[in-house]
Image (cartoon, rainbow, N blue to C red; front, side):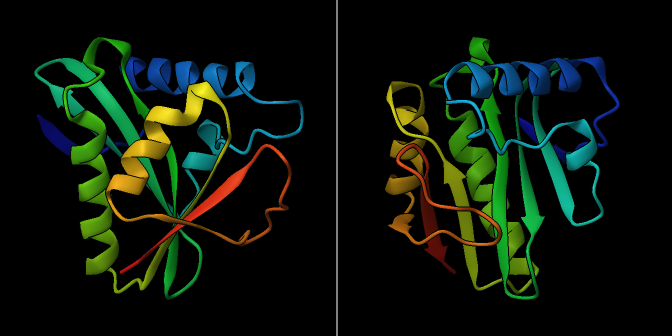
Length: 151
């Protein structure tokens, strides 16, 4: 697997991002989807990585710099053909390593609740993320949850 910064210009990356957004909308109540679209992911404070196996895209993930000491994990999605092959774990480690290189002290993420989110939540918790308070501009609801990792 090859992990590299992605400029979001390839059809493969855009298709996986589209799949991610569709999944978020189909598994979340109206008004509770905070996934970034293509324009949000091209913001100067966001870096997107993609994971490749030859010409096949395996996954995407992003780091949004919130301030000088914290960042947010965004847009984590594994391509269906590569589920349960370690793609998400490798990408998460890559993002954590990059956050440390940038001198960040904390990583945060917002996600939903329910069966569609359990695999991701399990991955984050195995890596040491713990439930915590809302951050940035998020508001707590019965659906969303917030996880944090001290670096």
